[in-house]
Amino acid sequence: MMEEIGQIDLFERYRNGDLNDIEMREFDARLAYDAEFKERFEYYQQIELGIETHFRSDLKSKLIELDQTLDLQKPKNNKSRVFLVLTSSIAACLLVGFLLFNLLSSNKNTDLAKQYWPEEPGLPVKMSTKGKYDDAMNAYKLDDFSKAAQLLENIQSDTSNYFRGVIAYKTDDFKEAKRCFIQIEKNSVYFHKAQFRLGLILLSEGDVNSAKKIFKAHVEQNSDFSAVSEEILKKI
Image (tube, rainbow, N blue to C red; front, top):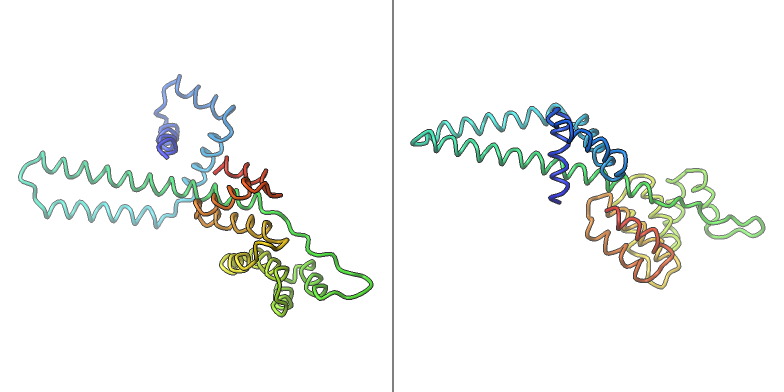
């Protein structure tokens, strides 16, 4: 974490033009050869551009309120006042830095989850005899997710839970997606697929520790998702 905070400080200095010629050349060179450093710098720029006006106003008002509180406290001497102002300013800067770091991490994890989310084509539809999932799969393949989910609700099975979880994710109902994936039994052919998707959802929500446990389990069990799970663990 200290490394990321140090990088935020470096990005701030770069943006403010406070780097000397040597530091500037080193910074530009690192952007060229260090992909992760470049990615974090791009996230930093996105966050800087995306900070809402009301956030700045709220921070400003809190600092004004803090200054008024310090005036009421009436320190006995100037040294005490300087100390109070200095420590309060440091605390405010640390808070902003911490918020920025969390925003950077959150965006990175959300993008990772989207990047590694596997596309699910659905079950093949039988042409000769009609199967119990055919109507739901036809609706699913036509992106009629509401109808597909409604049809699957009438079927109690791991298959139904799995596809309902996929549909819930596609419709941004992450809570329902997690509920469906968690219900799938360990002996099910859908278990590893469901667990991998569950890990991605947890990652996008910021529950990194729980996501890591799932990805590590895939690696340890040498599942079909072991290789991709190992990739994700290196990037978290």
